[in-house]
Length: 203
Image (cartoon, rainbow, N blue to C red):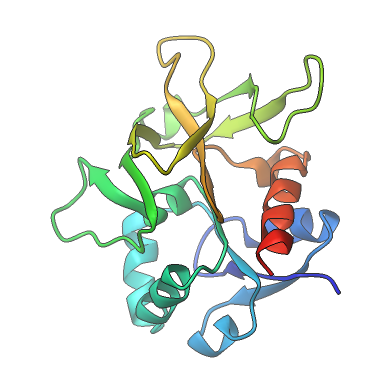
């Protein structure tokens, strides 16, 4: 049976994530209510504005049940704002901003700058790229980066060129996967295939 992956549908590229997950072999369900968390094999937290998504999680009654499911081992993939939501620690965030947590990293929000500083680049992403010079085309939109990782987190990708060279932009920790970029808009489903493989391995 195909794994069932929810896509948090409060903000962000929900149809694009659903399409990439379906291409990668999953069945998808948009998640807006606590009842839609039941029976999921994994969940995707799309980009958007992390403080707004955090508030909407509370408004829709999703924050606490989702956090409990993550603590119980539900696999999750967070892109951009989703990376912020899964981080245990935030830098330069409002004092009252809560995260779902679970990922042993410190994330700096909007680290690459404002909307006008959005950019695209090619990256080597461990566990995703194949032999040779195969790369992921990465789209960064008001993106965060990971400033520090704890011992349980594995760095999968860093920016390779420019003033931000060396900054961490993809991390995996067991069944949690995050990227600072938006793989759902690139037309390349390999990051989603990695996540679906993680979900299958966790079932």
